Length: 443
Image (cartoon, rainbow, N blue to C red; front, side, top):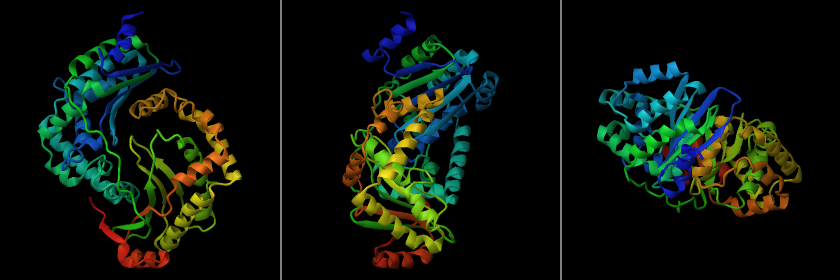
């Protein structure tokens, strides 16, 4: 047994608290590396929404040894790249490099992780860029509805926090806020190192050793509580934005998590209902038959706690009220009658036939490993999806829908102009106009 194998075998005994997974793949002369930290935007302190995303981006802006320009130059010389992503429950540093340069690349990555400088000039510059990006989000209705919807649906819960933050919170952040969040999040006890590509495990020996010695802050993160305030009855919220000619709509209920034993059956049924195919029921009813929207779909947003199951579409103003009414009717029918044999067969065939595309590259496989490890799924969960789907029956899918779908407890959220849409929606849905909430689109 080589030295690295001994080291890796000791992970479970806490000699190394960080978790390491590697898969050799020699199809291309590239190596993909994900360094994942458990703890994302949900860990932003109140009044400091955006600090985790800002902190992670700032790590690429300089170390105690290198400036941002020197980091960028080194990456160019190595044929490498590194970017960051902040999600609700984790952050990722994603890297790729020519396999011949894996060792110096890992040395640079270790330097970025263990010795970020958080230089004041870069910090202030990044704050301005982050605020500019938030304003860009406000100008993009399709992105805006996703963020504002969650803020309203999950008000008071960690899932309400925007991954990229709020303008007023970003403006008030200090350098000490970023440094404190770095020490809180980047502890090796919550670190995952996931790699795949054209190299050997031994390439990671020094990297793993240095990371585990230097990133021991002995910090903890807050567990995410269950969300206990889902919609009661029908809730309609207009996210008011002037002069809209089209409306972005999301209709959602509380979702489920990966531990639900009926999740595969629900995913199969959801694919038939609105899973992205032009043959899905939502597309046929809202686009093909009625021409109300160019696209329509439904999807689960997943987390360690139940997040949401949501239907989305985007009609023009005049079609918005009847489109909402029809979507609500379709959701109720899904609960009452489920999906048909024809829909079931087509969805199963499509999901099984396309399953291989979800793990056919090294980068996709380490993304799958990321989700499996963050949310406590068995190894190979994604690769085994096709077999699990193949074994589901129509009766199981419809029974799962009957339990899960809550047609009487939904929130309709839309980005539109209240003066145009409010009265018309109230009339179409036969509800008092004063029951429709109107909130500002900014955040």
